[in-house]
Image 1: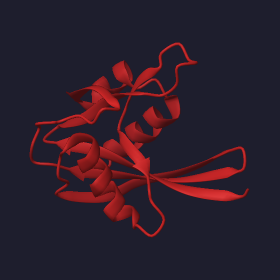
Image 2: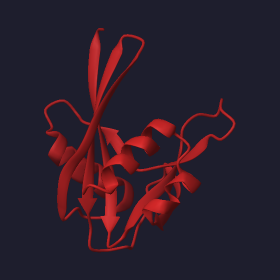
Image 3: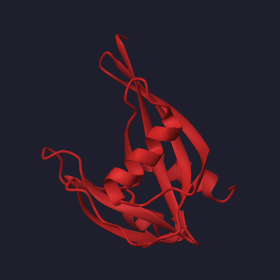
Image 4: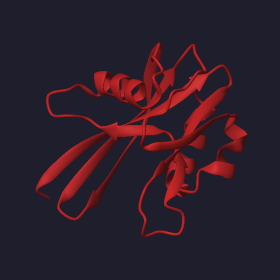
Length: 133
């Protein structure tokens, strides 16, 4: 492995609902836009805590009020290893202004996650921890 990147995921909560965004993944797959939580890479020199605040703000214009790490994960693609930190991010506002890379958004209850999220690993991790927060 030649390189390691840190990924942060903001699982944004307001009341009893969570923000899902529909973003572009890849034109070479059947559904190039997929539902997910807000995520992004941590720049070298930045802390993951600060990065998740900035990424949530940049992609949704929401301000994180409170946050805590819910779970971690890792994977490798080629020579690059990825380490991920999923944060529960609480916000006060439900007014979302989307960045250009995001097609749409929805505030949903946890029981609705399977209706949107097709990545089984993410769905399994989130369902495991949401009941324990």
